[in-house]
Image 1 (cartoon, rainbow, N blue to C red):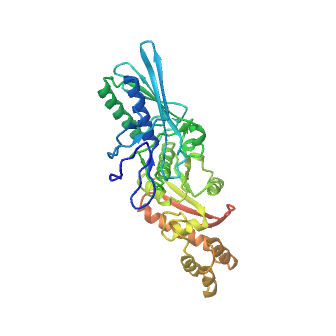
Image 2: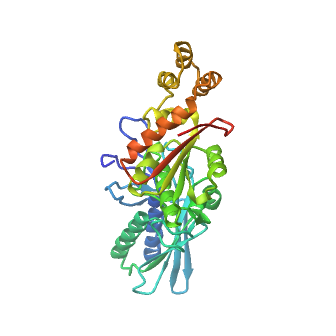
Length: 376
């Protein structure tokens, strides 16, 4: 991303070759809002647009949507600035959210103290890169904010000792559609970002949530976790194994992300549970199960069916089936255990990715109704 053009007015930059616009993380927005607020607190004027420097050197400028000085007898006591998050062309749930920062001067030697305002969550469980009780402002955004506070202090003669309260309008409501409640981040969203840039459809936030889910489960002493492709497979795992919520990983299409992270951070047992068609992709060696990036290989299913006793006629019908579930039904009618064969092959692929990590693996394939159609 180092060759990204500079963005003006907070608008995302065009990604080369893709035609898609990148955007800015909540961490970048919070940094911009903090920079504008602290500048106004020291100078009496809000810079609009406000320009910040991201970790890789980009210098986007953000238009201010909110600016307010809380004036006192001896000068302003606090200042608030807000910017609207532009996630570019990424389907980010926080796109369009208003990110505010309120800055208040603290006594000398206090440093930069972070607070969670309305819409920003608080950490309530161990296992995350923040201590319990801390506002859910991740380490890289914290460092970006500290650096920009120091720059503003140097430019305008401030001490750099401030309280920064970050809030996100409607953040508590938006957070219900994220992993935060399951990770023990309560009351709102997390302020995220490692580069400040949102790459469209990189799904980095989802994959990061998978990793944090493993961390939280391990910190809670869970020995058995489950990567599930959706809510139906989660219900199946709970029914089968009685796992608590903090042991359930919303894997979605990212089987590879779960397996690679568990390889580096092992648990005693990993259950992978999902729809038959999706897990047939894993069985065929695909680690990204999204329909736009991998397809059900009916020829592969036909080969498995032959391995399970299917004759030439049934094998041909499986190869020509419209869907994976149709192939499953054809085999079920003939007594060929295609579901078990797919589950076993998916388990074998998972073990290949784990590369000998001390993790016991089992796989459960289900149909759309949540009925178990294969075990491996």
